[in-house]
Amino acid sequence: MTEAANRKPVAGQAGEADPVLSPDDFAPATDVRHGDKISRESLSSWKDAWIRLKQNKVAMTALGVMLFLGVMAIIGPHLSGYDYYTNDLKNTNQPPSAEHWFGTDDFGRDMFTRTWMGARISLQVGIYAALIDLCIGVVYGGIMGYFGGRIDNVMNKIAEVLYSIPYLLVVIILIVVFEPSMFTIVLALGLTGWVNMAWIVRGQIMQLKEQEFVLASRSLGAGHFRILFKHLIPNSLGPIIVTLTLTVPTAIFSEAFLSFLGLGIQSPAASWGSMIDQALDAWRIYPWRLVFPAFFISLTMLAFNLFGDGLRDALDPKMKK
Image (cartoon, rainbow, N blue to C red):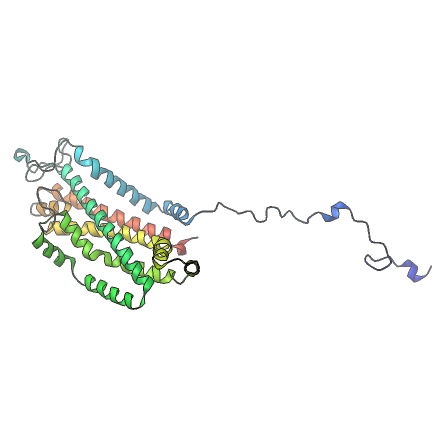
């Protein structure tokens, strides 16, 4: 037999039969049917932020304290059975007891009721001031950041002038026009407090307006204000909410400071600042009159600041693991 006859046929050569293939030859080497399966559930940005916020024990504890203070500000003045303004000169400067849980002041008024009335006033001032900052600062800062150019320069100079005016001077001027009250404090804080919010929103809008989705909206014929209020501001809600959370304790401290100086809430209305002022002279003899309002104002500011820090970390995409 010759050498050519001993050669084995090679598949694919002309004139030679192709090998017979079985169905098993077409089976995939690996099972790729689940290759594109997502390893975890798809989450929205807000749900993801909430999950990461819940993992922050300090922030969640601060949130619990804030909820407790809010509930007690509503129901606290009705628990002891006393009001915050009736004088009882037979029971002045009584220490904490089963009858008066936080003791009484120098007019015999129940300190427990007055403390939670002070919480109600302080939280109202903080929330009202934050809402004013939100309404004015977001709109003002959004217009500055979106239009830019000469509009931004003029509006920014106006904001700088307002920011340079001390709010204490504004309060004194308003007290000359109006009487000292919660309305006066909120108005004074609202006239100048929105500037920080406006500058934060301005910076966010200046970054976002260069993104592709803004160009797509313009290409589809969307107007300036639709782009600003429908697309840009909603995408800036993270820094806005964090700033709003940190604005509340600042306003609460400002109210307490002004009431301590006698420029805020006036007696017989209860305010943490005015209660501290009235207790300062005799705090060595009757320390409970100073301890309770000072403790709760410190606790409130600490809780809001810790929660604001945790919320900032939860909403920051750079903090994602």
